[in-house]
Length: 248
Image (cartoon, rainbow, N blue to C red; front, side):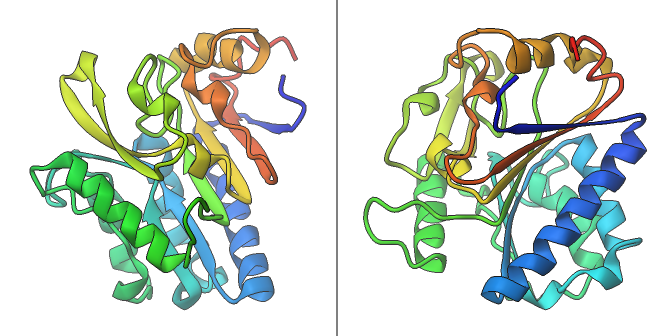
């Protein structure tokens, strides 16, 4: 396993979500105390949906919502009303139910039919918010990620052009097997975070998780292997099913 990674194995998906919620609360309050704000990039999928629900209910009173700034690490090229929209899921489950100022929420304008323009505009949003100079990357306090059964993370799929991107912050990434563009943070942004947390659940992820964490496989084939923050911490939240093939 990567020496920098912390592996937390929980029994059930619910316990995984509870442990991840505790991490969000801890990171948020520490960031606000240290820097006056907390910046987080959300992911899509069923596992973070459970986390978002917990943050909006059980953890609601423990979070500094007015100092929290929400972004998305990847998005489908669909309008915000589409059932596949990562923004829509987070808004329905969490953001619409908590006292976060609307100006603290930065979604990708994925309703624009020009996916490349969507990526360019979101990169401009990041550069303005983080007041970046040319060549800099933002330092998010926390980036949430999932992992697909093929080893992809965010919308960085095996063998896609975005894996080679070194200078852009956000790209429109053509995914041949899906016949669509996906919008995604690039690896420099993921690896610039203070903390990256993977949430992985289910037996369908067990085999690829073992490859990513324990085997000397290509990051081009298993993009999740390429996420390892240069000056931050990396946490893998796993349920027992996802971790069932690990040797430790």
